[in-house]
Picture (cartoon, rainbow, N blue to C red):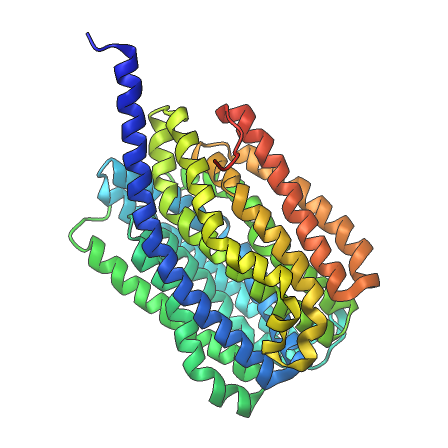
Length: 439
């Protein structure tokens, strides 16, 4: 009979092996994400230099409308696909995985096309009555097709992650888009201004969708589509994740820009938009790493190995923070020197960048709490945390943005982020039995 201590040591050894394999896979994913981050940074710097704060403000405001709309039309299906395709793949139920992806992709495509038509038709009304900027009408019409391409790009990337094709997912979501957009930005932005920058975004996201579908087809071409699942099962998961996505992927990063667009100037919007795009570089590492670890979390939870789950999650978080730390401290300590990359007029956004970098630093340290709850089936808890964060965002934005402009927007963003993290932090302790302290 095997001694209990022997089983304990075997499990610890197994968890160490899991962690090593994850770090190896995450290292490659982070390298790809770093490449994408560099390309995205060059792209945004180019936009700032070509358009200036005011033109960049119009572009970022249009991008905010596109991103929020894309999150709405995805209905949480992208995140549900990641979880359920990973489960089907673990069971080697490939036909069900393929059938689920087809259904999810078709649903998102249909809702995205409807949303794009709605934005295009109401563009003059939104530009004049909501944002008070007549020039926004042209931007909104240009950005409408991007709602479709951006939404589908995310769906394809999440499907590939479910198949553990992390390299391909990173290429789709983080490398192909900025690479293609960067090639097109100079001629388009110099001739068409902010609308040209939007068109380069469309070309980049369209190319990413095409590439992702080619890769997906190559992976699943030998499997017959199976529809042995209920559509309502997909919706029961995605509907709960949808609220979380609206807060974390739409309202949190883009809500303040939309508020600035409504009550502030295009210049304020451009300053905050530039600072936000810089701070997102930090989250790139976090996002890339946890896209690799998500299926492992699911397997450990299904095996009820919560000790192993704690060990992998906490160690993994510490490693990712170490990789992100140079960028975090650079933005905090040298904000002005970094913002000047966009042009001398952008230096005023340095304080906003520093505030956002602090928030992203905390997010890197304990940001896995939301993923842990999602992969363990506690979508209701995530939804409640999202509601709480939405209330904080609304109160902070209304209080701070009209009075403090881009700095107020940065503070509102960080307060919202920290409130959601704190909520999920204690829920992980309650549901899974441990605190998410990196160690």
